[in-house]
Image (cartoon, rainbow, N blue to C red; front, side, top):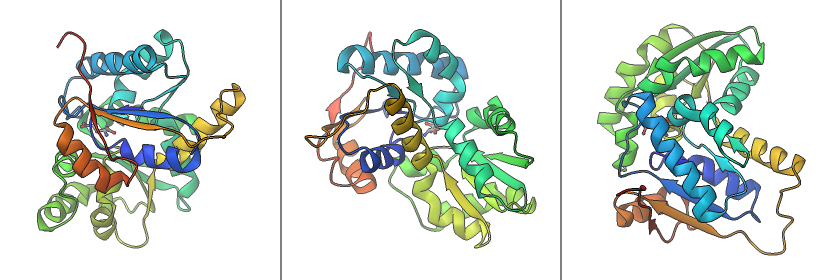
Length: 262
Ligand code: DGL
């Protein structure tokens, strides 16, 4: 599984909890984050490198793109070129979102890249659910999480400003369409109000992984607990320090991941 940084740990948590016998290799591309403000073709190139590294260097039997921006940029290409199944977070997120609403007015927030790509409009449309989707980009949220600042006045001020257009549309369910955002859920929930259900794609993605691996006969049946490896292209000490706070005790060690050619 890979992400631009710490965000995909929300998905890693769900996968470790649901599939404790599976080995997991997580790469956080913190040396090149944020993805959300970069051109999609640049992000597509990063996704290609990360996914192939998981397959070639770590013999991954499946790859989870634990990043909405990388999904929006490169999912189709990854599915076409990789010899293993590729799971994403956008489709599972869209499914959870349309299940969560009662009024049919739903919202999604994500990075500039994800929102501008229209990936969620397409994914929600594919569910066939008769919903109205409001969307907003939230530049700056990812940077707060990467710094370990997940609450406080500064986060609140930014959240109030960025979420105002979504609040105005009176949604009753809001999808956190960036895997970093669940770490800001308390602030986001305070701004949106108690009547809005926050939806994250993490659990639904873990269920999708279990179902797909099961269908393909690739599920680890148990016997021993899964091994978990965490890698980062940036500061590995910071990745271990903040990562263990965000994910939990499984993240007790971080290895260096070098992009090819560096
Ligand atoms: N977690 C990534 C996502 O889901 C964040 C992208 C970024 O680095 O800006 O989109």
